[in-house]
Image (tube, rainbow, N blue to C red; front, side):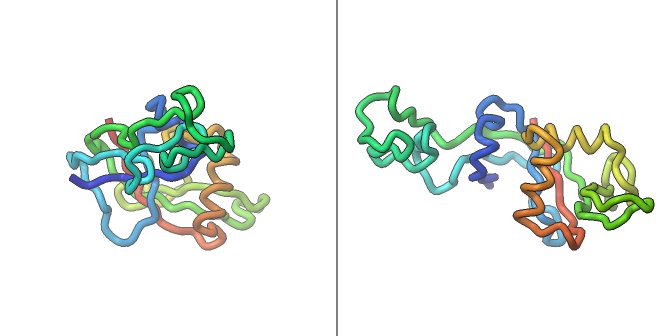
Length: 166
């Protein structure tokens, strides 16, 4: 079975509470997953157990408390598998920093692409953009775009696939 692996610490709570119901991955041509695929959601795929406090592999030493682990209250290890889900929706978007769009300041935005269920080849209205951001598990629009810009340099707009599951 194929897996989707996560390692962004800011999204751990959203994964644990099941608020996160999608993932956005850089497009490399074709989608990696298709509607109907069953995939396993995992935290740091090669780990067996991870310390919930310091997010490191369970080694008997908690980096957060800087002590040896002596009980479950100090180091709460959890299994790194969040479960098996079914992909229910796959579509492509474009994200970037668009300079002086509509004669205004530069800003981050998303455009629908090819098979986007919202509106293709135009900027997504705020309601759809906020739905994508919330499903991704980020607290704010600014945090979302800053994270993607730091990781993918959105000065040059790039295509991404959005994979949703239930």
